[in-house]
Length: 478
Ligand SMILES: Cc1cc2nc3c(=O)[nH]c(=O)nc-3n(C[C@H](O)[C@H](O)[C@H](O)COP(=O)(O)OP(=O)(O)OC[C@H]3O[C@@H](n4cnc5c(N)ncnc54)[C@H](O)[C@@H]3O)c2cc1C
Image (tube, rainbow, N blue to C red; front, side, top):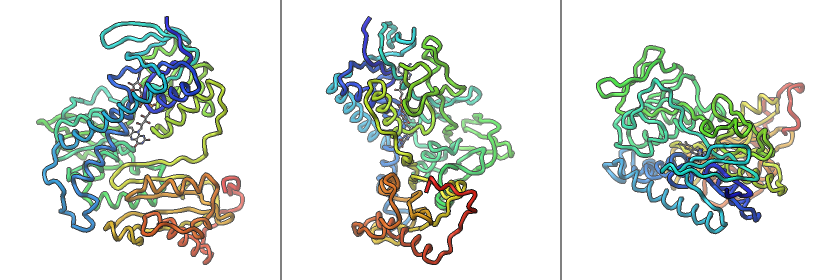
């Protein structure tokens, strides 16, 4: 039986980063992947496909230019599913190619097949063709990710009723779409299809959505979606989803019915740990298939077995999964790692995009920190005029006492790139004065940082800020 220093189960962002890190430290590494190609959910059904689809839609529809040329402006008149798929396949091929090259360059071995634990150091791998082999690992990383949650009563058929993995093989562009689930994935796809002029209904049992984002940003975002004609059916749970005369039909508990040509079911994902035979390794998962780990080291209850990525739950991002993979590999092979910074950015690639880092206004209030906000609208920047932007805003939150930056929240063009300026200042414990004293390239959207900081500065000077009672104040966070 072959034996390796490090066995990695799954080749998504956490598995790949961990494998390469361990190989760079000089250890023998085997990555086991059950999919046809390496890359994980991130490359094949999640991050990259959805972001490629978004980019294609924005380009072919001319969406970004409509501020200038009007809402009827289109780059390509009739956009078909094949138009979206063509770019997608090219991008995915390129991603897989790069990853295979990285593995080869770093002498990371790969094995195609489904891994199952035999004991805490041994894994059995079964290929698609049914061949079985066993491998051993001194250290093991579980990086198996998640799969869409598919309740048995919903008649998924891959044509009319799809989950978020199936949408990347979109058979045909629908004229109307119901998206069930207003989480990040549901909201991203709902807005991408809406930008394609598909009539979209967004359904969720909760009255509000994306509650972890600053509420003022979500208000602005919601206003833009309604303005575009998206139907928001929030605050009523789904009673049933059935096919009626070839139409997916959703009946809500409120009695309302939503019919559309296609339905995308995006109500959560479950950890893909059920097929691993965890008890053989001395492990158990929670009811959503997630493993519990020490957040500092990524070790499971069995110290030589690590877990990272979506299989351990929040925040379930490719970006954070990669960092977790690296931390796990470094800890497994006794490499010192600085602790992860307190704040990481969150990007929601909806149309318009949203990005956020640090505390929301609600969080600052909850911690009782006296604060002030500054707001900038992209249409106030010269770059915004050049781009024809009518929407887009940045909100910054500062501590009144120390002037430290506490949070940055952006909705609009370039939000997911712009956020990194705020992230750097935040994690370096920078203050309001940084933005006021420094010069920004002109004309750029990044100027919004200066405008928002000056807005906060002027409010501070006027002394009109809300101050929390002293006993509720979280001084350490300032
Ligand atoms: C639609 C969508 C959009 C997203 N957009 C973003 C985004 O914009 N930004 C962002 O940061 N994140 C995004 N994410 C989240 C991101 O894709 C995940 O956080 C990330 O892929 C998790 O990485 P992972 O390391 O857990 O592995 P995954 O990417 O989940 O891959 C796990 C791999 O393990 C393999 N595997 C599973 N079980 C076994 C087994 N028993 N044996 C062998 N192999 C196995 C699977 O085949 C798979 O290839 C998105 C997710 C989705 C679904």
